[in-house]
Amino acid sequence: MADSDRNHLISSSGPVTLADIAKLAGVSPVTVSRAINTPALVKPRTLEAIEKVIARTGYVPNLLAGGLASRRTRLIAAIVPSVSSTIFAETIEGLNAELVSAGYQLLLGLSGYDPGRELELTRAILARRPDGIILTGITHLKETRAMLTGAGLPIVEIWDSTPSPLDTAVGFSHSAVGALVAEHLLIRGTIATLRSEPMIHVPSSAVMALSGV
Image (cartoon, rainbow, N blue to C red; front, side):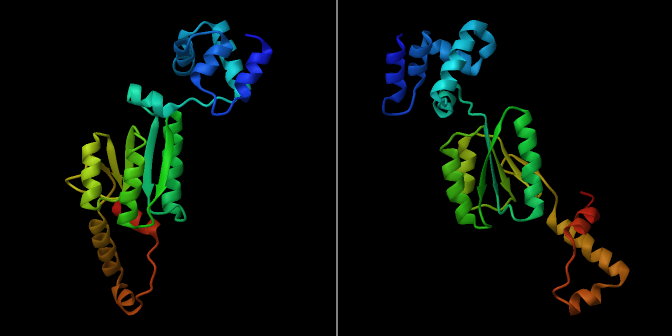
């Protein structure tokens, strides 16, 4: 294809498509798709030509369309109340690091401790067909639970414990932690202070240490 034809294709209205890349590289769309998804199966010279065209055109593969065909999007969604808290921020950092190393990307949603907002986020996230979803806590609206149960996806509920999770729960019992805190304060004779000073702060690190987390 002549350079003028290539420049016309690149400058045409609308996003560059996989078919455009195939024409510019002089290969079939199937070969371009293979170069993107399984590059080891493409001849080095052909792969190099395709990669050069992709770099020059700024082409971004439509992973959602490809995901619908393969049923894999390489996206894992997580809904947390906030990232302003160190606890949740550290959780997200660790989660993201592990997912990236496994070839996944993290899609993050903030619920603001609002069950209604969690429902909205769940609906929007499931529409993007993630490979799994992570929720904070075990208390959800019945509509949210029904939506998640019907999605057929791996689901992990974190920061709490329950004998009947939606799928998998990774966390600890907050009631058990509360009991341990009360027991610890009673042993130290500080329960009276706790009663007379309602604003006393028990560090989260201490609670976690008491619970054995």
